[in-house]
Image 1 (cartoon, rainbow, N blue to C red):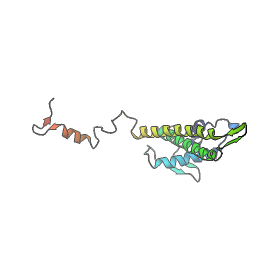
Image 2: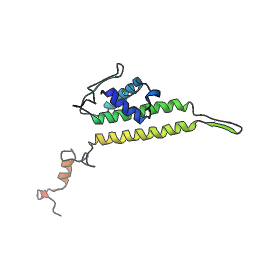
Image 3: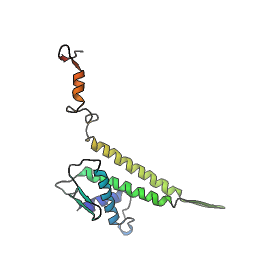
Image 4: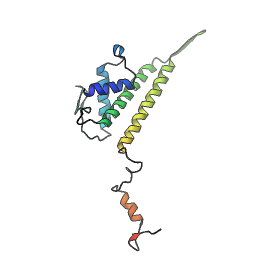
Length: 172
């Protein structure tokens, strides 16, 4: 299965567009959203593979879902970002329909639709930001990415903990 099948399925689950008989979003829209999300994302993130993304011709190479070179962080982050883009556009569309009408005892209130989508949007985007931060930190132990043994600041700490008069470390 190619990236179109696997990543589109992930995005459809995230935006709750699962019934093939009544898809709200076309395959082309889902795929282009994934490509747009990927293009926006690779500007800020270094992945193991270098991806060639062409939104116009709907192409992504190398395929991040290939078994030999599967890139799970790219798949996950791109799918979450695409879901954020889709739900964000849904909020903009629905906000024009967010009305409240009262006529005597009758009332129609469509403002809740936008509020529900906003909660979903914030949740998806927060998950994306958290996963992005984890990926950038190397999914490592807290603080290890900040001061590892070869970090630029680690030799400063070593120098500050050295007793320059005796040439050795402080004895406590």
